[in-house]
Amino acid sequence: MEIYDEAVVNCFLTHQDQLFPEPVANTMQEAEAFLEDVMAAILDSEAEVAEYFEEEGMEVGESGVLDAAEVFDVGDGRFLIVES
Image (cartoon, rainbow, N blue to C red; front, side):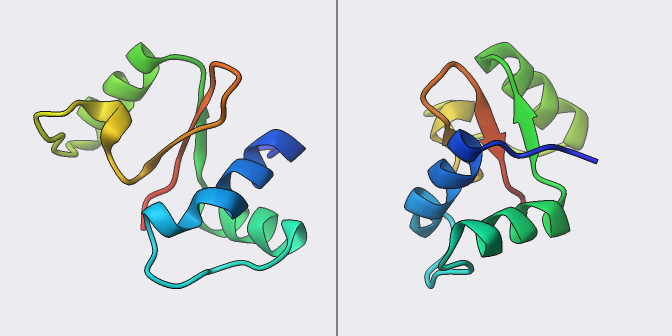
């Protein structure tokens, strides 16, 4: 089971509108539960994000993997991947 720390949960809660037209969570607890439910991944580098997309067979636009709506930059070098 993935562990979502405060930085990851707050990042998702703050920026969830980049992936969803309406909020899926309104509190830290709801956001953490949502991330657990969808089995969101935390990756440590852009290279890991690219590898994840390749392994999952996900298409990346010309702008690159970090600009995909599913990718949230936690701000500390980590990236959260939330598949909708």
